[in-house]
Length: 157
Length: 264
Image (cartoon, rainbow over the protein chains, first blue to last red):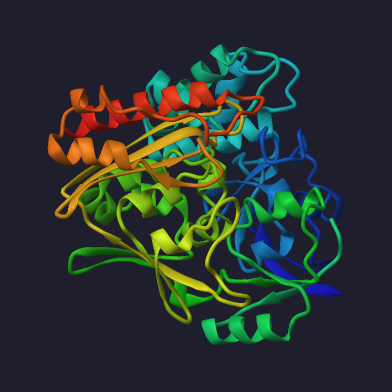
């Protein structure tokens, strides 16, 4: 049975009919072709699928698309101010080499943007604690932490 | 996951009606456990009734000596709430340590309590704070509500509306999280109340339980040293790939000591 769904994705209104069991991440990737949101573990552990719903970071592999009814969804594709530019947090990841293979990076950036809303100038401990829902298998986190602290300063400096 | 029919309840009465008409329904709150379980096909309800649009289940408020938290209130809301932080800071800290940032942004108090995972955090707080679970039908004391692993006193079609927490003199929650899942390997909630000290343990056994010997020792004299002669039997505790029963028994003692040290 199809369910009617209306929401906003990266500032644009979207209407669709989806099955109840369609996951939000599949709706974003398969229906809207927004493939920046990654499926890593598919069990709500790794955080590669992190997006924002009404400003809060959530794991889109552990949510039904229909749960985003009426909500405002932000994905990694929607964070940059303009085509060809990077968001200050993305730029900080680039500057500080906060990625190696890059698979976890979209989720890291989305999680970091939620984190720096609560902690505008986070300590190293606050960043590490705040990344409890994101796994990176390459970097050892050192440069991710440095990037997020620099990104916070660039945003709130 | 299996296909199902999705309903969005508009009110408590509407949710109750939808449950009654459905064949094998489940309530959907934050979905942080349920959706994962459905993806693994551990559960396959024929219908989901989404509670996110039910206004009666929202909000945090003080009612006399009680702190009342609506069933739909998310863990991140509890953690950030000034009212919770002022009334029962240990409860705000507990909520801020559930799962991870993204899970806390979706998971709800009612969902956690209804699921009664033997390693969940909230059941320890409910039991130690002598909370009552309010449903669309009745009021259930926490001691009667939790019935062992994933089992509660809830009847078919019954909906949790809120939890009323008695505000203690002081409380602390000490959790040893499993580093992968963040569930409590052992969690100990100690509450100092007008009627005595209450100690509730989660993660260690097949369900949340009170540690009576510790409560008696601490009620006589509230100090870390009072716990020294108390025996923590390991026989009824869990042994699994994460920890042995003897290790869990040790963590119950250490958790209680640390919680008491923070209060005293």
